[in-house]
Length: 218
Image (cartoon, rainbow, N blue to C red; front, side, top):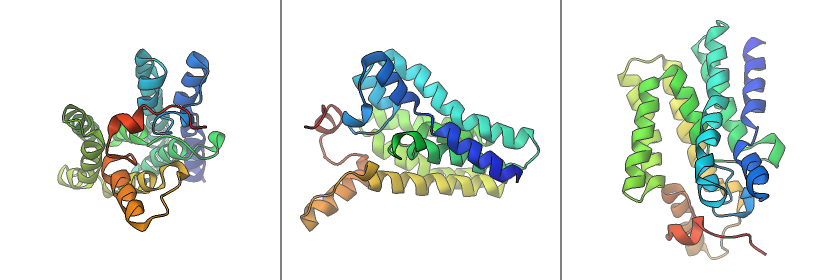
């Protein structure tokens, strides 16, 4: 019962759409209608206010760090702690309060890792930073998450942590392909290309500017 309560708590906390709230309060806009359409710190950075990415990012990390920490603090064990953090990530990605259209889940992953695998937290930050410097943030993030299970195992972390890292990879792939239920082209070849772009680049088009800087669609 304690684990179930923690998972429910994690999902509800993770569903709090901090980036969406920032967009509404600071600019009066709905981030789901801008750029990639994800409710994320990236959207806040490019469409709301650059400074706002700091508090939004920290809050999104804390949303998962809190239930993960509570799982350990309450003596529920590493499995419950990881599940609590993953539940927060699921809430962030598919938030109850926004019709299940949310963010990418990377910040909640960082929050979970910060508690159960700090070296993994640093690794993912570095992978994201290298990807950004190479103008391939989507690729860098995907590779960083994909290598997390191997790093956790090599570092001797509990098997629950390694399984949690595998779950992060699965959530990332599902979220990228699903893309907040964005429609796919009717043409089979174009559909395959869009799905490949989503998986590797985390966007539908090859051009980052054409995707991320889009304005509301009519």
